Image (cartoon, rainbow, N blue to C red):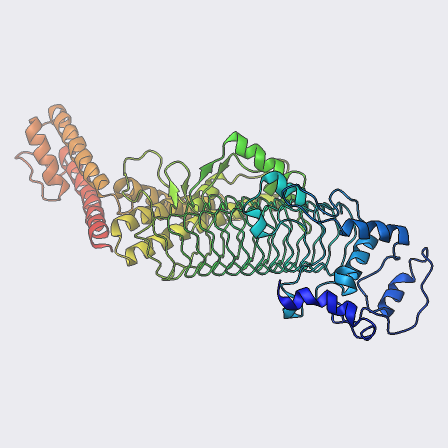
Length: 625
């Protein structure tokens, strides 16, 4: 402490006769009365707030404690703290608001609480409440700036866990709404279910603090130290946490909607199922953070560092990821083991966020045993986003959902995925958009005709979204020169387009003629897929070529022995091949209306179709057209 701060109490006593009307408190207000006003009765609770305002102590609302209680608290204040022995003035002592108000008024020889607005007082020590019992106490709006509610960082570095717990203040379920706790030492403090809405905790030290289910909505935590703090299921809606240090903090199930976390440090933090809708995380450090199942819908993650982060099952729809670094990040699906599943459910079950619909809450509470890959629909990337080694999916769970993603020329060549497509794979790698369309089922129970039509329309919309996702990804891959990879996803787009066409056929309120036309389109689509895989699987055309020639050769061989002229096996095969290409020659004695001639003409027609399709396949496959 500076010399100025050590001399302040002594100077106040020396010049107290001359400073009765001029000494200031933490709010820049005069501690001594400037207006004569009779003291209210101890039982007149309504008159005391007015009285305190006349005494320029507007933060006081309770009747002043009696002389006996004052003497007792003064004696406790004289006890010298001993960190090693766990001795503190108010350890285990139950205090009420009136007690805290009186302690603030006499702080540093009645100088009063620390004023955060005065920068010269930022290094001053506030009231010492280490170990005190303030459970369920109303401390709304109190100036507790620089309060000692636990060990400071220098002491914490060389003490035991028992010594940390001995110094921790107990504020469980306390009401600290709009209270001033700037730069307070609250290491290991107990704040479970406390109400700190709009509280000021700038640069407060909350390392290892127990803050489960706390309400920190719109609180000011700029520069606060929350390393390894426990904020499970906490409500931090709109909290100001710029530059806050939250490394290894536990925020499982926390509600961080529209929270301001610019440049906050959340490395290795636990944010499973956290609600971060529209949160501001620009430039935040989230390396190796656990964000499994987190809601990051419309979140701002520009230039955030998400290297190695776990985003399995996270909702990143419309998230802004311009310039973000996701090197080695995990966005694939994940199996949750039983112990982790029960642990997460235990955190979530007893708490419901305010303003959340019951249906949404129930969906959120049912933490799945298997987390699907992340949902990136409508997310925004740019060329500065880094996806080096990021895992977008696997063979078991498929890929992330990618419909309407704004790729912004992000480099996809560095993505960690089995791009070497195995054409014989029985279960193809599919995007999350297709997985959602497949898993969508019509609700059970009786429904009106309009309700059924609406559900069918919803299913069609999901298939159309999946088609867009595949086409957009294939276009982006082709633009980056990865034609082989693009071909696989372009083929999946065609397959999904055929399924979407079938959904159109079964839609109600469609006249018979249109239904017939759509059925024709569907059958043509099936034929093109079977024959050439929509031009992306040339081996199918080659197989079809061999099958047709062999089939017709067999027919020629048996038909020749039945109606003549007979052909040898080799002759039947050569006759079939030449007929296939439309240049067949007919042995002598075969009339134009002979069954062999008619069959050869049919093979020529089939051959023409296969040849055209085969040429188109080669063009599509090898020239990217």
